[in-house]
Image (cartoon, rainbow, N blue to C red):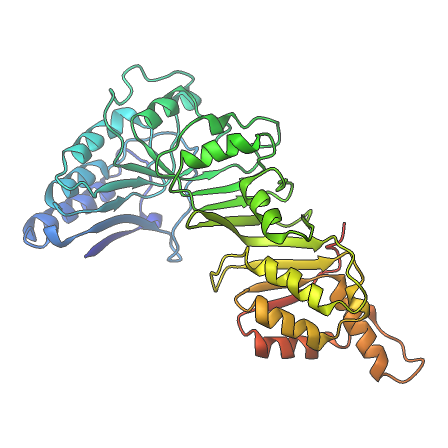
Length: 396
């Protein structure tokens, strides 16, 4: 059984210590739990959610000042009554790191009989970064292996964060956006229990061996999304990609496109990728083009609803390939792709075919290629999952 406590954020001043209305609502709920004690062991997940006036969850800044949360008494009460609880999810404004306020919560959490129970915060904040000093008592070496923080976003762990990690604090996602501008990946020296995802990582300042060691310390890590400036060559996924594509050479690059890899078994496969094939393809070498695309398909995640692929060729394959050739190649090898972006070579194919059916001297508008709409319709019939675009700027 899942239980979601929905409170209207417009009615409560979140973070106000003397908000009697909110305290009264919490007391009502605690009384209801007491009166229905025979049902509380059935609850597996308990979420506290504040909705804004328009029915949406409000966004709270993880950098706001600490406050005494009226929900603390409710959280402790839920722990004591819901003996089979597996997850208690807290609202955004309750940020992990308010040691004075959360100490009794962590104590109650660690007393709970279920080993499956996890207390989930959305964010954490080290008090030293707010007040300028480290709390002397900390969490007094209390186990934090049942505590989960959904996001962590800082340049590098501070002293409190290092202690929390050593105590077992789980970090689900690390967000690196804006922190990798300087050549400093020292955050990778640490181990983050429970890590499943990294977002907006540039990751150009570590050796291949260092990256491999980081991955080995984080066996639950399943997805990494890269900044456009990420250099793929000296990474486990880039090395595996080059090996699989041999003897063909490719450049994985787009100045504006985020790319991503996911772990499938022991292998890192691309979920978002832009590839420019570098090799000279013999004139008329449609079979060679298909082999290239077929090899590319083996390095893609098989997820039916997420895969993004951009493709272009340095070799002028659009001078001889037909649109039917291309549809056949894509259908046979990339049928599961959700977002497909084809480079200048498709423009060349469609412009050539359009010129063949137009009267001599007719103008071709390259800004809106006449053959693209029917091509897209034909490809959509063969690849119903795909959303297809022409991208003229893939070549670099």
